[in-house]
Image (cartoon, rainbow, N blue to C red; front, side, top):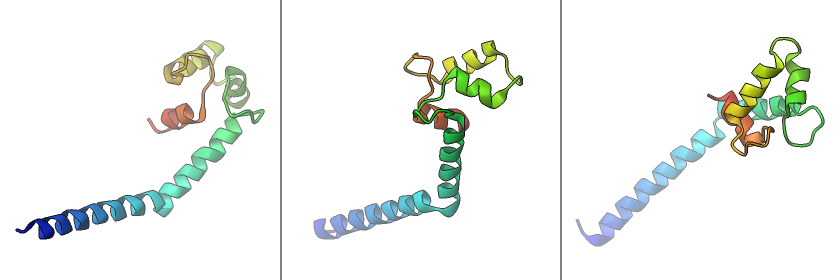
Length: 96
């Protein structure tokens, strides 16, 4: 195969791969799931400051979880170890 044909074949494959990824990203179900997770985060973020704290979680779960269970949950997903769940951490937690 000539260099030109090889480059064309690689380009076509890259384009096809890109197109497949774009289809996945814009898939209606994927978008709906992302919107649902964003809305859920906003519900959990009681004061709208962009983070979920143990107080926010306590308001949502009420007596279903103890404060110790809430703290363990936060520690499990909180990479910064600041006791707060950022949006990316929330998404990771909800999609495990």
